[in-house]
Image (spheres, rainbow, N blue to C red):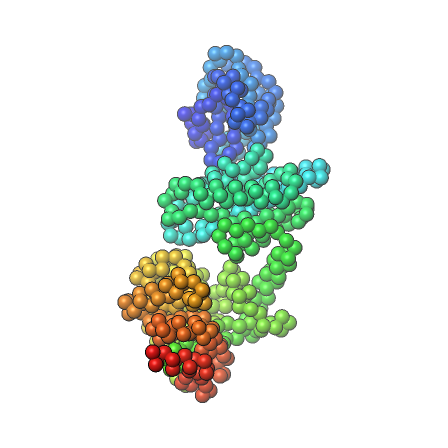
Amino acid sequence: MLMIDEFVFTERSALLIAMGLATLVVACLTSVHQWTQARKARGLSRIVLGGISVSSGLFAIWSTYWVGNRVLLPAPPEGFGINPTLLTYIAGVVLTGIGAGMSIRDRWNRTRDLVTGLENRANFIDRLDREITAHQARSQKLAILCLDIDGFKNINDLYGHTTGDHALREVAGKLSATLSRGQTLARLGGDEFAILMPNIESPTEVRLLVERLQRNVFTGTNEIGLPGSISVSVGIAMYPSDASDRAELLTYADTALHRAKDEESGSCRFFDPAMGQQLRERRTIEEELQKAIQDGQFHLVYQPQAKIRTGEVTGFEALSRWTHPIRGDVSPGLFIPIAEESSFILTLGEWVLRSACQEAATWKRPLTVAVNVSARQLIDTGLADLVSNVLAETNLPPGRLEIEVTETALISDPNRALETLNRLKALGVSIAMDDFGTGYSSLSNVREFPLDKIKIDRSFIKAVHANKQAASIVRAVRLLCDGLGLPVIAEGVETADELNFLIKEGFTDAQGYFLGAPVPASEIATSAYDNVIPLPTTRVRLLSEVAVQ
């Protein structure tokens, strides 16, 4: 082994500069003929950089080096010795070009990602610019693949950044080992990688490569001890059919990646023009959100939570609605995810909290009001102080406010989340876990966090008749909550069959359109919502049938 400029280089049978995954290999030249015989089997091309001669005991290389190529130099005279000074000289020249005067480390830091050893974003962009120019001249096609590790944020949150870095290196190694000569892999930042695939004939070639990449990443040995396999989602943009501009090409590949991640882990999507329209629409909504609150475009509606058998209302969940002056009603499924990906969710969250408490304070009955809190709000150190101030401003008793958090929000920063929840509990506010069963480590979260209620996610409720596993999970959650003394409420009850299942399984509380649709605050004080929800005829019949059984 040989240490040069803080990098470890291993001895082989030729001088090989491999700008690869994590090491720069410089091998001594003592038996290059052995390497020459084996080079074809290893898929390396022989690229001669000028000539080599002996001068004052050192090799002199004259020519230049194309960064990123694998280089094989011809053999020196038989029996010629090599020393560290010589290797340092050769490595420095090959990496930087003659007379560039840049050290190996400086060159590495400028072009490489220091965690994985892959090309960095800047170097990848430079390479892409050159390849686009070359492919344009030859009327050839190329593809850009953007790849993202599924659930990487949770790896960092649950296991720490050291484990996250190990995961990045492991995935980088598997991706690199899958690529063929001429294909370039880079880390763009975070957990996002990019691959430049030149000289392609059709999208089928790209899809086949993606299948190999995903298979190798998913089935490869998990060397960092994570409980399960790692997967990657992929977005693809093609030159020149999707775009001829480098910036657009990268943007479109990233857009396709986000569409893939919206579907399921390990998905792959090619860019299509509709995605471009959706991207522009998304950016427009981001801009319009900023002025929506100022212009009074948001309002709240409240969905009742009730006793299944009597219809007695026990509280309401506050839901934000956006009525745009031109677009009309904008779906929460559209604007909430956009808000959550930006700092606007903090502004929107504060508005929802203050508005809900103000309106709840005017209700005739002391019903609870539930307010959803995002992961970003939960780890904000000022949330507890904000809640305390809002309660004081609105004169709403703390016991009437329920904060709903998701499992995913809890694990985004468990220590800070726990601290915030404890402070909220100290104020007298109750805590409900929303969307139970869709996040991570559900049972440990129930035990470790100060929860007052569990809400079973709609995805399980709607599947109870078609999926035995979903039905079993719903039963198990109710039994778990009974054992822990935690109230449980079923979310998203929309059909008579779903309600019938819950009644037979012993559930007492539910929420959903079958029991009551969201209503404006002005309607809550009416007789219909003063005490009980009007019982649909179908529900009355169901309750009667169960009572007879």
